[in-house]
Length: 325
Image: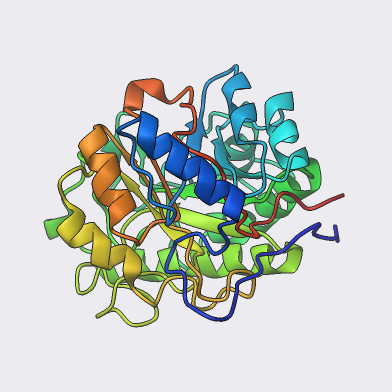
């Protein structure tokens, strides 16, 4: 087992609920300077992160500082830029989507198709189209996919010593896929149970290696339900959640991210959630920063998934930069 170089270390004096724990005097000074020269939000409670799904993610190096956070894509995760981020003290999450049967990228091919981790997975009974990228996988408890996921996760850790964890797309307690009729879906309980089982495996592997994972899928009270308490927001097994282009909806997504249920069962972040939002507009960025419920916020329209630059300085958070020295 690889030894983690650095684990999340909370202050113990206040629950962060997804905000930055340590802000030095130097950072405060630079924030004040930025406030005098720009209309960019200057809250010290959140900082920038970026999604770098493009084939040449050189811009990720701007996040090569303690507290910096970037998300690598399906096929570019070993680019030198991500290794530089980790070496500089930043954290690199690698994209994984176990919910859609799109086999593009080494680890998705390993999960979906026959591989050293097991036989090919199946689609959920009923052949449910999720979106333009694929169909719903059969991730029910006891499925082939559930049997294979640990092997895939361990392979990712072994092959990427610079990784800090996973960005897990579409993993929620209910579906919001545009081509999916959730109201008439007959297996809602099985969907929730399968999502919890995937979260449990991710938590187990993450804890073993001192890593984290955040989920891009909702865990909303009484609408799929949070975990373990379905009447509360949040997934206690995940280190945080991701909110994608929901400008103007902070009245819902503020309390959603501030729920104490996030990360409650993580031995790495210990209830100090790492919530991350990307917005389309500067106004959207400001409302998520000012909510005090997000550790990371950036304005990154979909067309810019090649990555965007930080809007401010990185603050030390204690997130793991990787699994090796």
